[in-house]
Length: 561
Image (cartoon, rainbow, N blue to C red; front, side, top):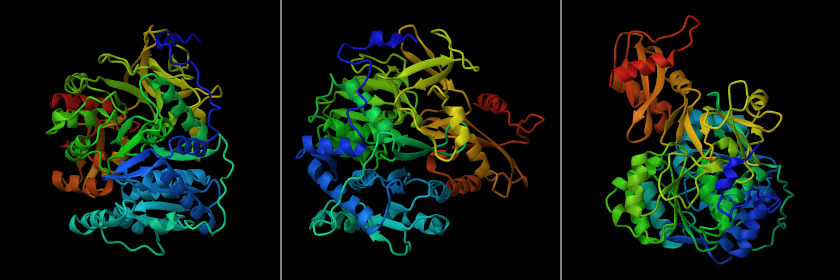
């Protein structure tokens, strides 16, 4: 294969990365904490956490996992936390103990929570109290043995901790009442060996191919799957990003804004692992959707890197005071997860003086596959060039390579490609072939220059603010409502979120109560999955076999605009 994209690489970017640089994520942590010991690693609610303290707290917690809970290497542990200091401490504690992290979105519903915990077989969970009520209702249907709970500000210390927790729990009412047996306080786990008198903690041997993370995604067929990512997969993507940015970002001197949830793969790699390698200061935003709060925090802290989806940039541009911020330190604005609107790119560049750099990836690729050069002057409509040590091929439906400029399925091969899907042997065979090529399910074309243009999803996936939504999942939930006879779901254009969910419903009893149905959906689905538009119809177009004709629904949606 001729790697035509290498001709577009700046001279300082290597064609290949050195995969032997780190043996594991625990090794990455150790070496970064040694190199940047007294630097600020994380900043949250005005309280900083140094690299040295991150190392000490995660070591204590890892010792607790092993010595007190008896967790074994390879056991799964769930993290259900927003972007607060407890997340990096718990994540690296689990990693250095040899455990496998299962990320859970705090916005998940009870049914989503139950499925992911049960499917992964987690023995333990670290969870913010805000979500404990949901857990209490389904815990008996899982294999959980240990529940570690934390309040929002537990690592802030002193009066600030008390004040923030009181405000959050009692004045704001953000913590519903719950009952869990034998729960463990987070702060107990990080003090477990503070005096050094207990059994010594020794790092287990972790190999690059060892499983590090199970990250749930709906996969390429609409069925929820756990993507298995190894230490080597995640390290490879960190090294690829580091090589790509080596000329533009300075180790130990950058401040990265973490608005993306760390529990999502984009946020985990771009806003946790990459900044750790870079020795950056990481400003954690507990709720990146709260743009007013984000602007306030950015006004108090100089920042040089901001990563987000297109929706975030769009909302920030509309937020009062954003255009008055000091952007003199901003070097990089990076977006992915959903298509970047040209108007957003234009407006962002005008306000900040810095272009938005678009990238492309998937959970199955840790996630980054391609990105635009960081010295790009303006929006170009492409998702970039393949990263170092990454191969791209555009294929037809039979798997035959297509010439440049032809549209086909985008295939990827590289060290960041997943091990496979958790407990889904048949899906593994279909997704990654014997030569290591992963079929993304995306339609794209590669230009003669090597730049990749993403066209659309092969299947009927809906993309809401960078979150992947599958119509079949929506339909399955809506059909459980007693008044629904039939339903079909599609994605429609939305100025705010890129796409929104629209459902066409055939009523069982002839009563078209839109508000009642929407309320039902909100109780069963995460907010971004809930239908924004509901249209009652007499019938849903289907083939004789019963297969839904989504193209007919799209035509109906267009004609009703």
